[in-house]
Length: 424
Image (cartoon, rainbow, N blue to C red):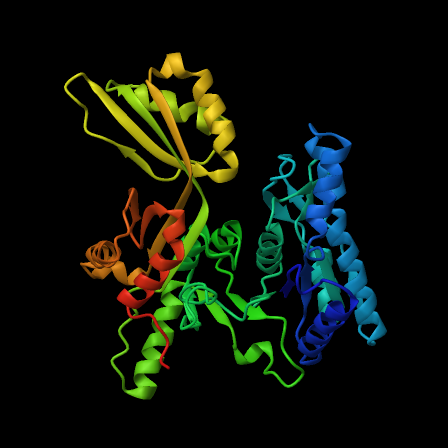
């Protein structure tokens, strides 16, 4: 069971979480709980680091920001003990959760789980701070923002859990953001691949790394709301969204067809995501020769700047071309600085940057076997006068770059175009 920052924001909410955990343990389940820091606490701690030293040491940064989860794990264990439960906290180095030494963005390498499993088998509720681990030489690490989701999935895999329940401030995965489209539908089941695409293109429900790890380790993940009243059904009643493999989803669909006698062909499009954290860079009059593009993207990769959409125009008669690509908005200034420093080596004429763009994506495994998904998207946007600046695709996703001011309109238009609106 994993609880996010809004679920842990204060003693009253921690008491609500403790009640949910106690109810699950009372059913005879062996339970491990992963917790985030209180909402806003990590930002506060990051602020202290910047005030202390603008060019802070990432290893000491990890020591500071990991303390937020340490506080909530201890408080939840104390609250559970007050309710008569056998509970204790296990810090990242006590489990231990072993990571590499990439401070502030560490990756989990392994979890030594025997002691944790033995404690759970004895009836103890293990409360584990998310987001943190330990390097081979014993230093504290953190996994990057949103890393508690990854911690939870990793722990679930290590203890071979039947399920990993992610409790958050929403009650599941929707066809799109309900704040934009009031008729957005909650999905009962989503495949790992679909959730991975949705998470990577702007859906804020789960961290991308956690979904990728769940798919690799075949951990069944359920998204639930921790803001439920005392009479709400328990987690075993599946009130949220279950993220499963293609094979399990096929079995679920077949069972529904058998029980209900319906033609239950899989929904063509599962969801629509919007991401305003994108920025566009265009380099004009780049030499059209082997190695020119590598000279652009090599330095960006070396600086760990992720590049998403890439468009290279057809070369003009002069043997020159324009190259357009997108980077995370937070990395725009660094990317511009790097490219400016290498202007002569790359050989471009002018750099044009635009951070007033948004990426809109439609996602669904149904695309694999159906034609016309892209045509529907482009026609729906064109009919409302929304200009497409760039396009990228995968087997189950189509993304377009548009003006940021048209984000909400585009989401509503596409939600209706693919008939995703819930029945009135």
